Image (cartoon, rainbow, N blue to C red; front, side, top):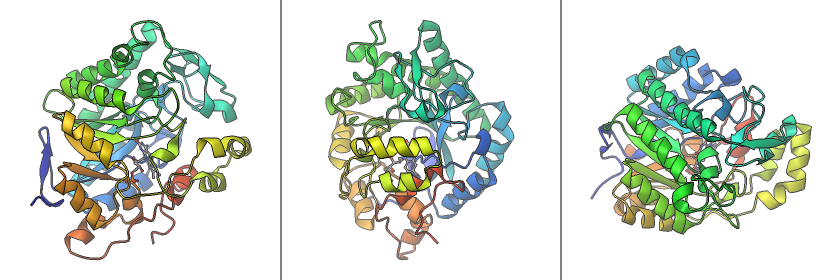
Length: 392
Ligand SMILES: Cc1cc2nc3c(=O)[nH]c(=O)nc-3n(C[C@H](O)[C@H](O)[C@H](O)COP(=O)(O)O)c2cc1C
């Protein structure tokens, strides 16, 4: 029988086991610079035995950042990133970078354009506390430069030492905004039918692939559904995954939900709203959260491996490898996933609760399983970055 501790490969990259740290924006890049704390955070993951860690939300360009505490890819951080990656390699772990772009959704006051740009003109919900109320529609030139930003970021990320790149197509961010019939109302070749809505995301994949070469591992994180009326539904996600597969993606990570429309779908467990309110510094944002929070943050009780059914359906309809993410926390969960043919397991909250999880399991030591209290989510705005309040 296959064990989660057996090595396995994604394209030309071999991982020592089947555990991958899921991308969790760390908030350890003050002013957009990778900090010593970010280094320690991933170093601890490496020392805990993870096969590959992921640097969460690496914006592909300055205008793709959600705020100015995020880093964006470029020469200004080459030294910090290469030192970090080399040290993680020495500790025996591989390193992936999650490529993100917020599209029309941003509160980055350091934008070099008047407003963030998405598929259409509309409300920039995230920007309201910063007085950034609207987003603009991308024109053809903007679309070309958006694709170029991914290509340039991919070239940079490969050159700086990342072993793998994960393109974020889900959770309501830029590429997802184009895929979604709710947020994409364009009437050119990038809007309308599913094949038109997939056009930009697939062009991004092919630009990234051309930049990194055929043997470099590329992962896609997608949302199974946005969990909103009129948004992306599973039947379209399945077709999108098949299209990614045809375009040469190496592995798919089926997540779910949308940060702007239904975030709790991906974080089943306790509602995160009280935790967000506790840590939010902006009085205006706290007021907005109080007024609109109940509608946005619905409660979905935790159940083990809550995305397995849909992830398995995707697995059965593509050749790409499948990386499970969503509530995997116990030894039984890990064994079930590997027994059922999932190639790798991404862990988000479980590793915040227990960074040494892979090594502890391998040596039959007890682990502290995540309780899905979701307090870690509130710490996204914390000065010290994300953490599990129960991890000592
Ligand atoms: C604190 C925190 C930050 C997160 N940030 C990101 C992110 O930057 N990008 C992303 O794709 N998912 C992000 N996620 C979602 C996780 O990658 C993962 O999909 C989700 O937590 C479900 O997996 P889990 O049950 O193993 O935590 C974040 C999750 C947490 C807890």
